Image (cartoon, rainbow, N blue to C red):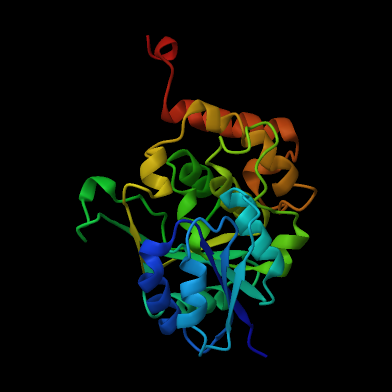
Length: 286
């Protein structure tokens, strides 16, 4: 029996991207059985317009609710509401390949123990150009090891997996959520998606499938442009212990050499030492 797929499209100030969202929905394959288009801030009429434009697609459910929640909580609400066996987030300003969904489903089929699969991400400016200086680093194809997951996090590449396809039941059972870490102000932390993907990599495995891709637009109001996420700061790495309650709970594979000790301190020291190897302090280089 084939898996059912839910695609979640969170909206916020999305009037500019209505046509892009509609085009993306029209190109989603029949294997996508549910499409959730959701606006929880209702800052404009994008959801209303999309409800009208997509009324002929029975897979689409448009949700309008003025909750004022920040994006991690919005996305978690969608994950909770999704009915599919496999779920993905599709940002309103992304443009995936036509084979994006089917390619990621196939990748998960090849790796039945993996939690998530994602493809190549190309950053595009407002003129449609792809400046080389913006392009993110991707891991080697296939299942990402613990070493690679740590490097991906340190190099600020874990966000690439946020728009991937994951196994809803397995991720939920592992306790992996997009809730904002309590030690950070509700609207002051942008690394939740990175921790979420990193926790999946440690808990069950993440696959990079380079044969499918998505174009992510960099524009004045995009989260990536606003935060300038080229490399994470020390403040973000202070949050690493928070993911332990998500990533472990006794579920980290025993074969994971780096985490064999299975303690909160070992994970914290592991990532801290890797971080300092990447960016040694002035004192350590003198």
